Length: 345
Image 1 (cartoon, rainbow, N blue to C red):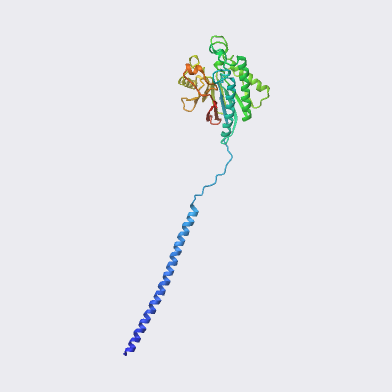
Image 2: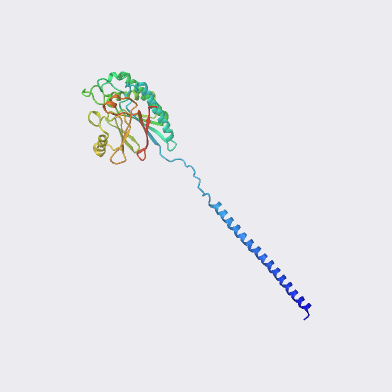
């Protein structure tokens, strides 16, 4: 073979190898592009799936709550108003201050009731007048020198204040029921005088206020006079007693434990009426004591009075003026909320 032919044949082989390599490179590049396109598609599909998953699950879909009309039964309020000591005269208390503080209670009770009504209707009010609404004249020898009004003036002045309180309550609620208990300061004469307990100046003051309201045509008012020593409060299934507080203990004074034990005996059957709670005044102190069943309670309520010399010196006791406001569920028969309404400011 000639040398020229040999180089010519080798050249053809080399050229063929180059073409084969070029074709292989084109195929490789094509396959690479296809693989890359497939990979990009997978990545894009994965990202899109993650995106869709996020959109579908985050943030969590919280169902909208449609506000349904309240089906809660109407509750009732209790105003435990006690121990006004009308005409008592101390460095910080007199008849004028009494009027201011009682009116302050009504104003605050109205505001609290409006707040309570945002949760449940409150249609009815029960006013518990707890006794010692007047200061009286026959409890201790120096009493006539510690008043700013005679017994007759106390009788008229406090009755007019009661009329105003009940009238205001009728403007706030659909109906008002008054339950009234008398106290030891309404006693006529000394303890040794032969005067029936029911002949009490507190009770006479209640009757004057009641007659004024009746004659004025007050509507949706329920107020019956009672000659009983202990008053009964009934609001649907809720049952309670209203006492002044001097009924228990010697000389009209007893410790909280003594009162609690006494009331527990009442509940055990010695008092002929089932009740859950007891409302007490007399001690001018706001307190609560649980009864034996753990459900009922004794609710002690303060006074509108301040600077009581006998309490601070003789009993080493003092309290800021206040009265009590409760809300009652008449179906469940229990207190749902309670407030100590401060009256000093």
